Image (cartoon, rainbow, N blue to C red; front, side, top):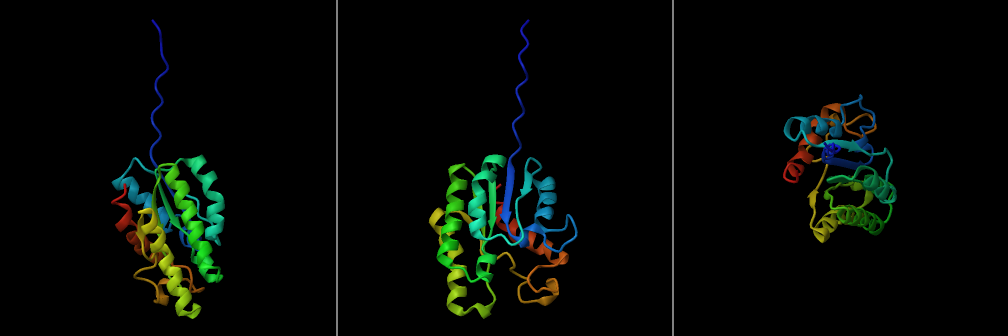
Length: 192
């Protein structure tokens, strides 16, 4: 009798989050960020999925574009949530560079057959109307160009209300994280 090795069980699909401090749970108790809450939600509704949070506080779209190839190779995600650009805007970096970086990330993800959800951001008005409009529009342009899913604004429903933010005025509190999750989940659930 010949014994053949058992076929390896297929790897569960993986959801990769590539973001900045808003996704890295900056200043929050461990396990309370929106990505942690997403992992809990997936255990209930889509238990086959695993979540890897590759977000780094301070990350720019350039940093994400630099890291994306190694992340894709290491994790082989089925879905990638790209939530970058806020630090580009806060630093006043050229929107054309952010758009190019986000586009490069989407192209690399799609080359690996990963679905992409692009999470948009808005800037406070003190950056000037023209820059702020161009900045926000860049997300929609990338989403339309590549026909990918987009969440227009991660902080929808909490922006402008200091009660939802830590003392720095930039990072949402733990109490705001379920609202961020709902914003993402509204789009993401259709993709899974």
